[in-house]
Length: 394
Image 1: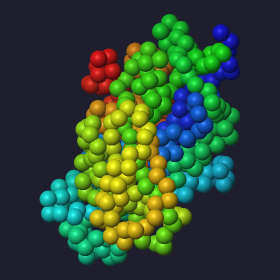
Image 2 (image 1 turned 180 degrees about the vertical axis):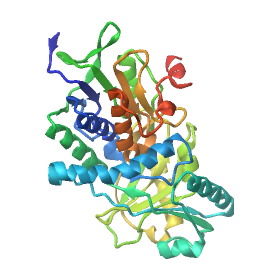
Image 3 (image 1 turned 90 degrees about the vertical axis):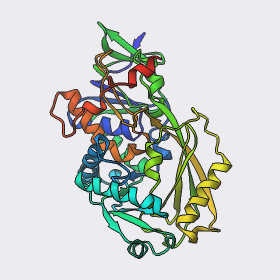
Image 4 (image 1 turned 120 degrees about the horizontal axis):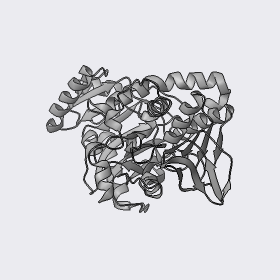
């Protein structure tokens, strides 16, 4: 088998997580090669809404990673603009978020969540119904309680991933689309290369950043992990005058994110884009890699959105799309080296939070790989935590 170039680290997957890992590794001085079987940022990243959220996370390891990421995103984009100019444009918009309870049963859990988040360092402001409608004048009259999150933000995920990869190239790295990784080459049990069509790419480290397909690559690499696809769908309206000012979602969205149910989970999530379109989600289904758009699901999304914003009734839908989130049984990302195969690293399992968690994930992985101290405790994200490898072997 022929040798096809070489790198210090090969990142497999050119979505937002792979791009963030590649950027952080190249910033640390490593020669980085990014592979993707398709074009960069065309999988899960292209199906995302660009959310950078603190509001939907209870105190714990994921929130700590989110806080680090929220701090890092604007700093990273600023430094990339200085380095690569206009290629670093990602439509960063720190517009804040609003969580709304439309019945009394949801009001108390929302208040308990905001209290816990404040104790963890998140700016979460409890609001009366009229205060919420002052922030969002088109909001339903059925609001019973709400919370404002000034730290929530949004960016354009494809542009963000492209910017990160542009920085990798500017530092001498390479990004190869249309190149599928078929497995690893080992020497004395450790990674010595990545197998691709027609040859092998020598490297000292391989990063599994394949998103929902990370479980498949884990099997090919001889180190299976439990990462499964969880499908979501989004409606996109025709451009409208300003009707939604920030990201707004129903209070039951947090429970839907944390749910492990196989059955359909739907919760209203509504936000406008810079072009005037309104994005409407959110659904979650564990249906494997079935990418069929289900009309019944889209209708439920529309109904839930109209419950929050009655003004949306009758607004034309311009398009719909769906994608797969990388799901783990304990709802935590996987970031770290695989103890079964030295030199194999995983960065996956972020489910719907990959855009928001990307820069801190990349920095964490790069610090671990380079033997540096870490800003975030890596232990909760380790590959060999309970349930992740056992279920993969079952």
